[in-house]
Image 1 (tube, rainbow, N blue to C red):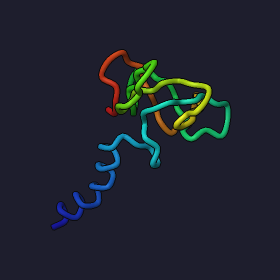
Image 2 (image 1 turned 180 degrees about the horizontal axis):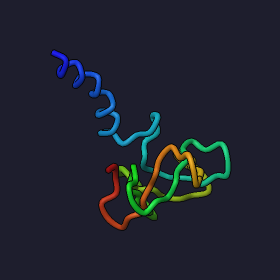
Image 3 (image 1 turned 90 degrees about the vertical axis):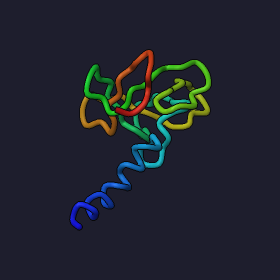
Image 4 (image 1 turned 135 degrees about the horizontal axis):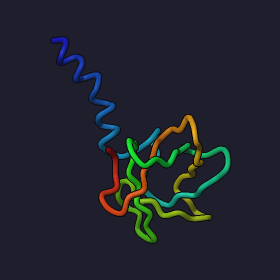
Amino acid sequence: MKTILALLLLLPAAAQAANCTFKGIPLHGRVKVVDSFADIRVQAVSSFADLRVRKVSSFPDHCGEWQFTDSFADFTVQFVNSFPDLRIQYVNSFPGEN
């Protein structure tokens, strides 16, 4: 009985991870880098990342595909060295969540 209850409590977290979002923001699309007041604070790392990101020049439709832009962004990011919301790793293939 306790294991069923534990699985039910973990279900919302698993469902959120499956749809590739962070606080309701899809983790794909057009991204603008800002110095302050960002939607997501990120830290670029080489290992143990929360999200693998592939830079694309068009059609950022899948999880982890980011197109960097200066206008009409879907969300904004701020690169930080400490206390990030997400840790990202740049990759050339297989973007998405770990």
